[in-house]
Image (cartoon, rainbow, N blue to C red; front, side, top):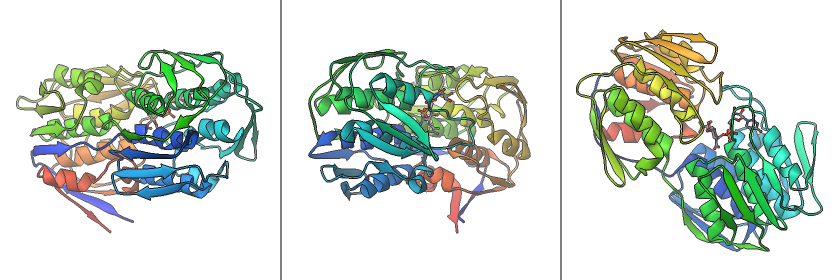
Length: 419
Ligand code: EPU
């Protein structure tokens, strides 16, 4: 198994170009099942998760021409409506195939995605929304079996115990595009990835209004046609590099981004003392005076993203003072704490909050990655650490960070991947 070796202490400098968004790419690739003809998706991040969803589409019968950062997909040849366990279990995001398969075939069989180290991942909202549209759904032997005579639009309330759900909104929105009549989704997710998916669906002929708000109005249409579409850039990858610049006391320029997608992250970084210069499609970040402790709470967009919580935790361990980080989306998403403490952090957990005593120094050691963003936090801590850190189970990083080692090397980091 591959490992990443980092010799810490080098301030990062230079420019880094951010890739396409993983969490936009997954539902957008799934949405190609709804359209006739060929779609060409550009700015596709070349990641394990995007390859997994393409593998599933291929196993269903789609014709796929992958050209690294773009892909042509024609799903006219798809005959199969079963997404099997051995592929779905690789990535929880495969649940976004349920809505498109059900819409396309009036039946769908999708393996239950199962648990996850970031805590329980229920799918009740996905099932509720699709049932409201007219699906009959049963869970049998670890599979979701859905069927319908006809999907019909109606008012659907999609709020759950933790607020809105990104992929439940994606599933119900995709199904509603071809349902009869009008669907209103209340408490819809407003994440930029949902807006991106809606823009793609609208380009293909759907009629979705209200994107970026909690109320979506979708008028059902008879057909969608494949189109060319460019995915937005990955705000979580951008935020991770922002932390890399700060944690190494460097000065970097993060390019090919939409800064408005990063407002909560930029706000917390500035509150902590970061100097950030925003441009239209890029930002420069530097940390010349050290950082102060800040408190933060994760929320659905436009709040502080749960997918940046672990990375900010690594950063705030080095800030002056005590910070409190409260996780409101996945209250058990604290797997990185044990490993950060082994590297020298002083973090304790109280309920859904982590209390971080700052002013720590990371010291390189052997650590183990546990999930995608936890792994990113360990790489960030390693970049700032005294001495050498060896990170194992790095396949988690391949799920969500394109060319991570190469991009950090270009910024001057002493990092290598070994087999
Ligand atoms: N929830 C329910 N019922 C449901 C669905 C979700 O109660 O049916 C709860 C979840 O347990 C959680 C909250 O709602 O407490 C939000 O979960 P959400 O459904 O929004 O998560 P998701 O759609 O499964 C996406 C991203 C995650 C990201 C979350 C939150 C993709 C492929 N995944 O997951 O990304 O953390 O939204 O923003 O889009 C990552 O990239 O590392 C990652 C985990």
